[in-house]
Length: 301
Image 1 (cartoon, rainbow, N blue to C red):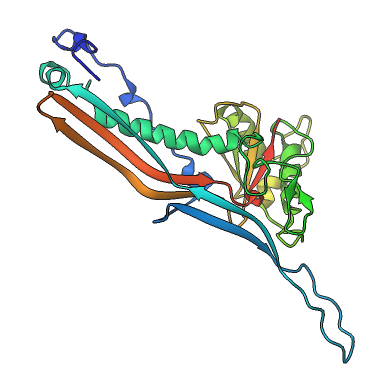
Image 2 (cartoon, rainbow, N blue to C red):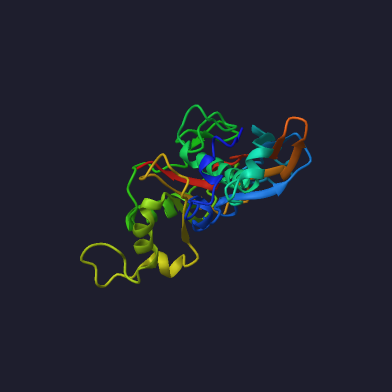
């Protein structure tokens, strides 16, 4: 609870100014860059993998056709979780305060909710190899042992980890092209965006924007990535705080990382006149997670 004792120096007009986050530059959200976002009226969302047959066979004249089947893979359930918080100030604190900008509980709560949303979104990348956070097929989001419905395995991570480089990016582009579809056939997917911690901004600028292939001594080879994948761009994830070396690529897989909103951000104020308290609150319900690991490529450098 915020009392006059907590903000005693605002009870008289003696301060030259208030220092907080209000003048900090706004941080662009990466959620819409990273997730497929939608709303729902359900308590949870289930998604199920299925695969059809990869090929058909030749048929002999006058003979029957080969009977094929479909296969069921893993399922994923995303629960809608509730997030919320409140801040309470005494009426005396608000009445006696000489600086209205100090007790800005509603603004503080909204900023905290925005920060939490961004952190939760980034944690999916931060935990990409963490075996405590498994997806539907029983593997971390980035793994060399993802399963197909027929039992075979495939990988969505770099076989040899590398720091950001022109070579590493071309390896990633080729690897994504070879991702199998659910029937096990090469999918031909493409990289669309690179997601990385802010420490790698300069490296990715050089890799993606240089007219010439960005490696030492090169004066003749053009940057083929810039020429052929000109839409490929990089996004700095400021809340990716547990690494400065890992990086990720998102693909054009139809099913990406999912973000569902059950109840959009709500806020309100409640006054307890008998006790002399004013409470500001905020809440939302949402769920998110990876469904199909083909939507991501991971490099744990």
